[in-house]
Amino acid sequence: MEIGKCPRDANKMLYTFESEKLSNGIARVSLVLKCPVCNYRVVVERLEASRDKDGNVLIRRFFTESKPA
Ligand SMILES: [Zn+2]
Image (cartoon, rainbow, N blue to C red; front, side):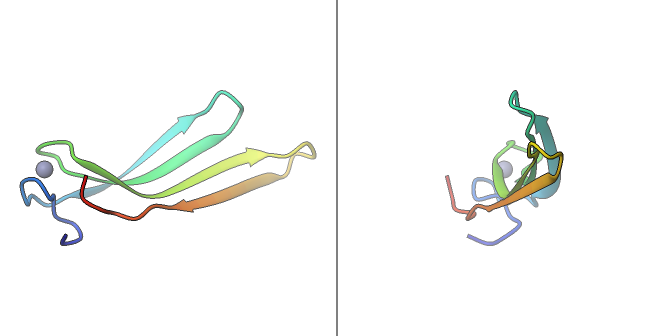
């Protein structure tokens, strides 16, 4: 699979950020490669930010492998 190209239709995929708030106070930000034509998407990286009981911001980082669906 060529990075940056949609495996379904070979169109150029675009990087977008998606953020969401989870119910437990965690903010999740995902870096997503997305095909504008068929909406095929690959999560490239994911961050989750939360606060501990002392108010310190904790950031956890997740990497996902891009592979064909
Ligand atoms: Zn596509």
